[in-house]
Image (cartoon, rainbow, N blue to C red; front, side, top):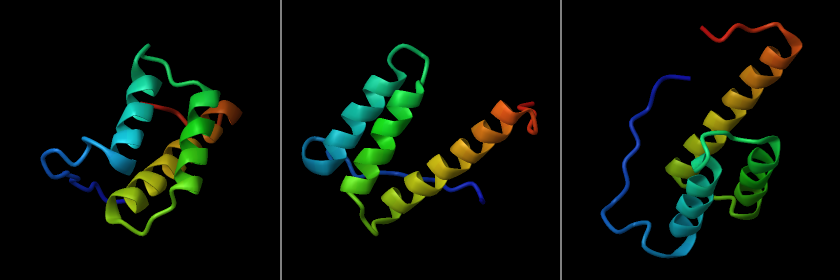
Length: 81
């Protein structure tokens, strides 16, 4: 997947769905470790709040790539260099 630059409008995360997402992501990264449960929460949140908005499509595609890499790593078939 080509690298994509993503921006949001000022104050776009002050309320609503974007604020929910930012809060979830802040909790996920707060301790520097992302757990399987937190990944599951993000996947569930994305499923519930499914959107065709470019930012959501980008986030879902990025999450799918990360999970695929992680599964390869867990099987020992991928090296994170």
